[in-house]
Length: 315
Length: 311
Image (cartoon, rainbow over all chains, first blue to last red; front, side, top):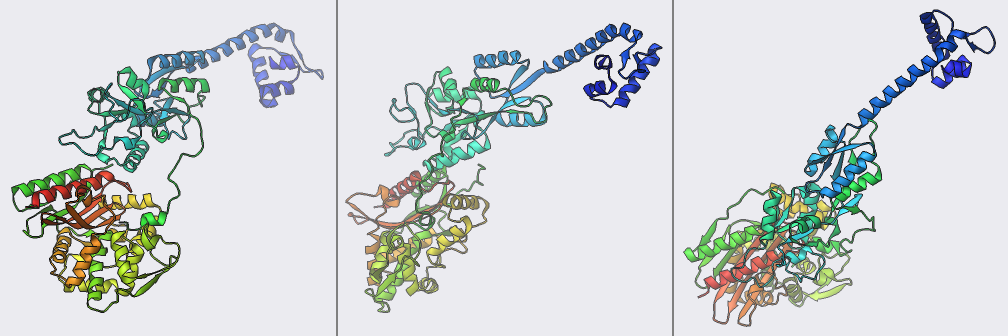
């Protein structure tokens, strides 16, 4: 067909991206198959023979059908469910928006709630196409404020109710310790926050804020942790939607380095998939209550105090 | 973080009530992630309570007490003039946050006042200036001669800084992390945290020393009297003194703080005549430069011990 359109073997071979001798051999095979020449090669410019002209519409039809077959196969391949690893306790409405938007892009998402480390390994072993992966908030594309949930009414942070943020230093027990007063409430960590980098960072920050390491504990099942929190016996580290949904009082941690950070990552070597369109990534992140991260200046760090003096024996 | 191997402190107490207090203090410390030893003894009755009292611990600045006693003994013997001027140059002096160690300009201070700076504000440069006059080996030999077997003086104060900076390159957080990690593994990256190489002592040996100082049973009375006076001038009150601050009580002590180590030794004397010597030597499992709750727990221990041991 290309030869008929171009009236030249060499131009047709160019268009098809094959070598001219190969094209000539294929035309020869066809001519042997149909029992007569399809092209008249006697002149400088080749012309299509009567037999060729007769077969041309049929050939066009066959090629069109083959093309449609290829397309059908491609779209069937694309509409396979693409598993997306998301944290537990996503907002269902926001997940639904991401599902709908995926369909508009011709991708059928399947949401799978997994703990943070399982989402990373899922990407690596190919069981997940995409995942919301935890990252340090200052480097992450999306950021979710973390705060402390406490029993409503009783402000477990020990500060005035009007205070907007919680500083870990506030959680130190107050002096004088009244006789018989209960032990200070433990700070519970949900599965979503049991990520090595985060636990490390929290334990350092808590130590610097004067809290003993034993104050921070894994929450276990979220329902039990919430019950303890609502009963005023624990402080739960969680996001605002999660706390509000269960009727707990919530105040964000003032230290933004302790907030959750997320990147939307794709599985490596996923042929054809690659990066998720930005809008879809944003919708997925919204399901965990994330806002696009503001990439600000350097975090406020320890001032330039006299380092040698700190390393020396003191008092 | 991994849980350290559980250590059950061996409590001592002269009767059931004293043992109960010792156990309560040990439990209170353990809840804060603090390991260590504690001993309190009524100087006059000999009644005592504590736990792990013979564990050898790096002393940090607590070692300035036996150092001061040896220097004061030399002074009392007429071998060292307390008025002798000593020049301290910031360019070459020892590192520290207080006293001459924090000076930016050369100063000349008399031996007697170096002792004051060393004990009142824990001045490292003053301590090392005194160690220039009475070498650490001489101090150690003197302690041996006095029978203070549980106390070892092996190095200058600046050696603490040199070893920490050598291991962690002037990074306080890293040094602290090394110290806490090494406590779990038992292998010491910072040599001065290894009781076998550090200026080290046990609670029992330190309380024994304090008791002899307060009873004039060591060195000579002028030396022990001056040591008692200087220890009464300490400015730090955040540890053992914190719960013993009334006009009816007098605290004479010396703190020691280095990375995760928080110590204090001293004697509380009441208007009523009760005298209790105590030593709290602690190691925290927390990477914090300041830990007010640990200091307070040490203070609470001191008060509870004093109240149960006084007549």
